[in-house]
Length: 388
Image (tube, rainbow, N blue to C red; front, top):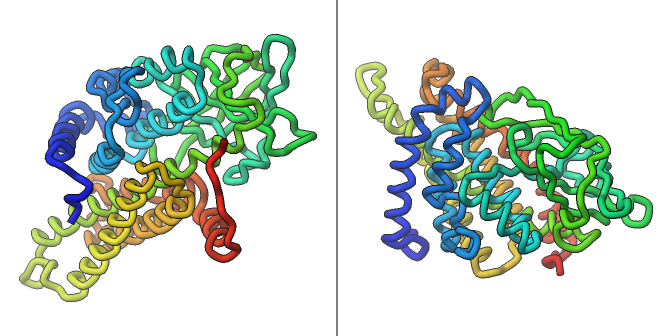
């Protein structure tokens, strides 16, 4: 069914990446989940294999591959059953690094984008604030130009890689009185005076370092403003489509893995003299789940193809995240139920998976916000265009 998207080369890449994860990552996942810290050397191993450079040009050390290599990369990251590890990888590669590539100067690209692709540098993207989550326009963090630098004051929260990253891509308001959407995209080094971070204790995604970050009179050189002054809001909105599609793909991959595991369990677990995959109520629920997963998967692939073709898929990406994370939650809930008491035990994957999946309808724009974005397009007939 998906031969139009995946070639033999894609299949070889998938197997190679799956083998890499099995060897280099899976043996350490439980340790990283318990400590909330991912060993730094794994970043370099990803970089050495080119796994951070899938979608970036060869000029900066990337592989310049099509989007379905990224789809494979995301799907396989979900199969190791650590939403936190997966998030740390893709938040670095496709949140922070996207801004470096799209808005960064050539000097920034050669140093920070290349270093990120090679796994020598780790980045985070700082948008969400304690008083403004999905409402980016309510941002309070402020950058004021003073001579040969900007001074940034404010705070960010729920930032993936927010504690241990080497650099921070920070979105800040630039002129709060004249235009509430006048923002800038700034590149900050972790060791700049005035930056402090603390780790947050989360329900799921426990392997990743999600942080709250404060900026106290942080002096940032003028050449660390990326892109045009005041255009940061529009850059953020433009890149949200990729982030939401990523979370949609994560959703279908997570649900697919949960169902695969559960069907195997059902084929082995016996009750009343037969394996439980022979009970009609469970068989029919499995059929429903397989149908739901297949439908969102097919839709996500179509959206990915359109994004790769250069189309602005803001509506479709919002739909992808909205429906895929909903289906993922429902499928994993049902799969845990099918395992009975064992589903509730930490030694089985569904317990962690259910915690990790719950962030899907929240992060990257809540489901409620996505419904309003979609409603503006399908009900109010509003159209969105890329930033110029």
